[in-house]
Length: 375
Image (cartoon, rainbow, N blue to C red):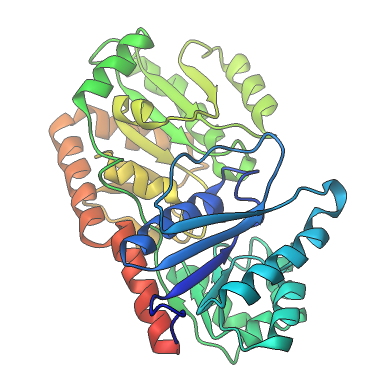
C-alpha cells in the first residue's frame, strides 16, 4: 500500500513533541528524520504547546502538523485535527506510542471511513508502567494494531506475556554517529570553560532527576573516589523532582565542589566530549537512548545490572555493577580511570558497535522492513 504519488506515507502521533524533551520525543524526531532519508514522507501529528521545546530544523520530507493548544481540553480538542489529517493524507501507516491522549478516539473515527493500518511501539517495560499496557488492552488498540514493536528483548517479553495472542518485533533505539562522536576540540573547550584540568577525571550522567535513574548511587561513591582522584568531577545533565534530595545528599557528603547538577542543557555534546565515563545506574528502562549516545561519543559505560542492560552492555565496552553497593560502584570507576588505554579501547569498541547496528539509518531500515512484511 502506497500514497497517491507512490511514496510511502507514515504519520507518527506524538502529542507532547514540543512540550517535553524526554526519550520518546527524541526517538520520534530522530526516527522521522531517518525515515525521510529512506524516501518516506513522514508527518508528526502533535500539539502547539505554549513555550514549546525547539527541536531545530527538520528534513523537508518531514512535516510537523500542530493542533491548537486548548489548555485542559487539549487532548480531546486535538482529535478533530488528527482525524482531518489522517483522512486527507491517507497514510499507509500510523505509529502510536500511547493508548491515550486522543489516539483511540482518532483511530476509531478514521476507521469508520477507511482502512487504516497502525503500529504500536512500546518504549516502556510492563513492570514499570502496567497501566499503559492495560490502556492498550482496554481500548482494543493492541488487538487491532497491524504490528507491535518493542525497543528491546526485555520489553518485548513483557508485551508478549501481557498480550498473549500477539507477537512483538524488536527494533532497538538509535543514535546519530555524525552528531555524537568524540571531539578533542569540544573536550578541550568544555574543560577549559569549566576550569577543569585536562587530565582530571570526569564522570557524566545525561538523565532526568528521578530516583530510579540512580544518580544517587554514583554520588555515594564519590567520597571514596576522591581519595584516589582528588580532582574528579561528576556532571549531571538533566532536571526533575528528585533534585532537592540529590542536593541535600551532596551537601551532607561535603562534595559540592565535585558533583555539579547542571540542569537540562540544550547542547549536551560538549559535556559528553569532555567526559571519561558515562554513568547510567538506573532501573525500569526499556532501551535508554542515553546509553547509545555515550557509546557513540566513545565513552565506556557504567550501568546497573537491571534489564535491559544485560542484553545491551558487553564487557568489551561497559561494566555492569550492583548500583546499591557504593564500594562496587567506586571500584568499577576506579579500575576504569586507572587504566586509560583500556578505557579508550572500550570507548572505541562501543562506537564500533554503534556503527554496526545502532545508527538511526539501521533503525529506520528495520522498521520499514517490518512494516512491509506486515502489509
